[in-house]
Length: 368
Image (cartoon, rainbow, N blue to C red; front, side, top):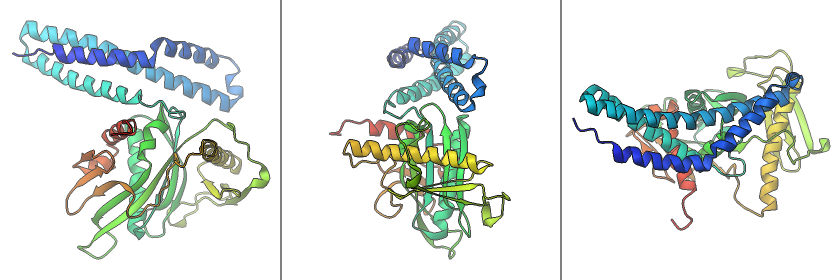
């Protein structure tokens, strides 16, 4: 039985040492202790909003520390497992060791990608907006497929996802949808998904045997702290209220609780109908509006043309990823060249490969 994994384990330990240095475990433990002290204050929940921020931050930091410590422990256990297999000449234990090595290589690779997320807002929750583009009914259906894909991705990782607003199309699918994903480094992770997505398939809505190309735009912004740096005068906004509705116009609310806020100077529009009351929807919409305006403000201050949310037209010529279902099966990212041959898995939330490739691509040297 040949089970010499010495070099592979040494390489993993070397990579992991570099990761630990960047993560700074001691500083992370100190931050957890500070947040735990805040979370233990008896009157914490007198201020619900502050309590949620503290407990969410604590949960994120604890998750990050547990991830690092788990890998450390598993590396030790793997060496013991290899030693046991070699001493006993046990092929079953050897197979288990090889499988654990592969699992650790993936876990450390994922953690290595995360340390590349060092942007100003990378650690913030993400607000994702999907809009149907060119392609009629197929585009609306595609937009809904993308929404499900991201929500399934969040579910697979046990990340909190909240749908904030959905505008349903008349025949099928959605015109647009906005949802929040609250997870460690959610914005930094999902920001590489921003852009125009293209679907090629045999249309279930058109003439039989005819391929249809459709487009959808994905926008990703960081969700900022309440009122962070951006003050919005009341006379700069128009607030419209309307009745929340579901697919086909079916009423899901008997009162005008949904809110649409238009920022008059910029034309930015935010709709919210997830919450039960008009007050809650207005507060949630204002928070998203502030996040979008903060990005605009920062870009103007830096005199940068680049937009974090992207200048996305959802049409020919600017797509960043293609999902091809006919005449062959493939999903390919046109920036990174990363591809998968099973679109069904991708649409079911298997996005980690695309995201990791995108984060590495974004960090490549400028002359590459």
